[in-house]
Picture 1: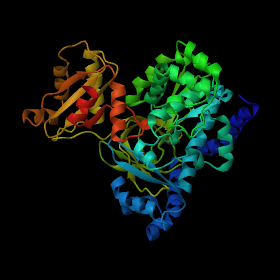
Picture 2: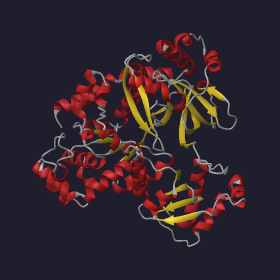
Picture 3: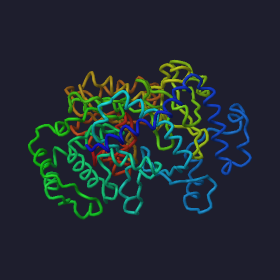
Length: 515
């Protein structure tokens, strides 16, 4: 690693110090911080809101604006995206995102929204560099925006570096292991191949940040399964079998690393300085993060906060997930009472879902996430991510994601599985719940699943009324891989796919991917 790269790392940490100090100071009075943030956000959105922005306090805001979802903005944002005369101020770009279905959402990123993201990233980065100084001694890999293949075919391009100020782009280029435009590839497969090759070429890799740990496991599998092809590309400095798809992406030439790749018995040994990985570690991602740790003994797995394309909710800070109070205005729905309250009225132990008001034009926008208030830093709440609130309800059985996770955990005592997912299977021919597990030692596992589901009053009633067929358990050794393939086929973005406890699919999808 060059001297300039080391200086760049130190400069990045130094320039985040003021952001860290401002965030740290604000932890003592979350109400003052949040009330101020609401006023500045509404003032920024005045060209978009008009007279509705003239609100003097939170209480009036809550009375005058309803809770919203993406459906309330879809037509507005699509119009803004196509129009040259926009009402939202300073739009930098529209960011595509995908949910659990094939629905594509476009979220406007304004200049102030980017600053608000940076208000969360700055304190986190400074705290992270301070906590793990070993990451100062090598390049980093950050997996950020991935595009589905249909958008690539349409010519959509996302360069995350463009979201940063010019001076930050210069510094980041010096410390990033992958600066080549791998998103220019025509397919996710070739992008992954290029990413794996570039990472192998950097022996001094010290840190990686991805969203789902399943993405890192996929990269490790590519290194194992395509050693020969990767080594050939590194030896020649060309993409060989992917040359056409990657013609716009420079290929590194490193014959020494090609030989080391072919000789290594454990791909994790390719990077002797690689000691820290940041990824999701809670809820359904926990078991996959544990898999990563098993693949690379000694690797520190550090959890991420709750980030969505629409906004950030929590950041890892001093070993806790703390509300990113300087970024947006937050409210929370108490999932027991359904009352909506601001951040300063949260109580320890509450289960809540967040609502965001952002400089991107979202007002009281509800995210489908379940959080537990685990404590406070100063007066600022710490929030533990438990899972998604969106469940399935084919005939009134009302199975939530949290219920599904508990059912799968109980099912593990009978099957001994590591990875599993519960599917609500619905089409013209059938309606049933089907769990797919990676292994099982119990022949009557379907009966065990049925008994666990029947503990829910609504499910039991639906079965008695013959609205649902009996539950079923299938065994497939590649549950994770098939789950990812199915969601890629649906149009989801590879880097954003995480294996959820509960999903609704069709009988055809079940047949194609798991039978």
